[in-house]
Length: 169
Image (tube, rainbow, N blue to C red; front, side):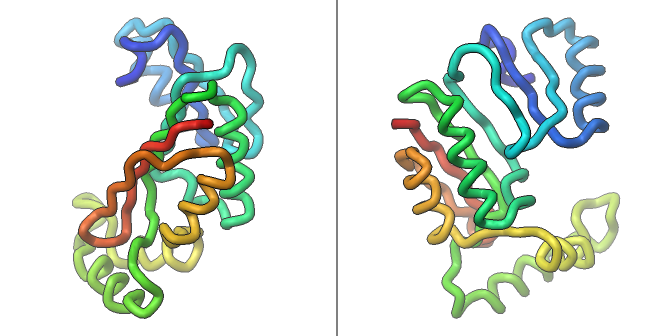
C-alpha cells in the first residue's frame, strides 16, 4: 500500500489467503485501485505485463531452502527491468559460524515473554528448526549470480536481520 501512490501498478504476491484478504479489505477502505492481489509465491508467480521497476520482499525468502532461494532470486531478476531495484529484508545471519551460538542465544534471550508482545523464545526456536535463514556470506553471492548488483547492505546489530538494495543488470 505504501508504494501505491507512487506506482501505476502494484502487484501484491503472497501465498497466504489471509494476508491477501486483509490487504484487499484495506485497499478497498482506502479506495486504492492500482493494487492487484495474487495468491502465489516466489516459485509459482507468473508475471504478466511489462517488466517491473521494483520488487520488495520482507521476511519471506527465509521460507525457502538455499537452492530454491537461488531460483527465486533468478525469477525476481527476470521480471525486473534492467536497472530495476530489489529491496530485500529478511532473517539473514551476518555472523561467522564460530559466533553462531552466542549470536543465536543473544537473539533468543531478547524474545518476548508473552506472544501478545512479540515473538517468544519458543517461536524463535521453532524458526531455527523449521525455516531456512541463510548466512549473508552465502546469500550475497546468490544475489550477484542471479544478476543483481548489491548497492547497499544493512546488517542489524543482532546479526540476525539484514536488508539489501540491489539493482538488476
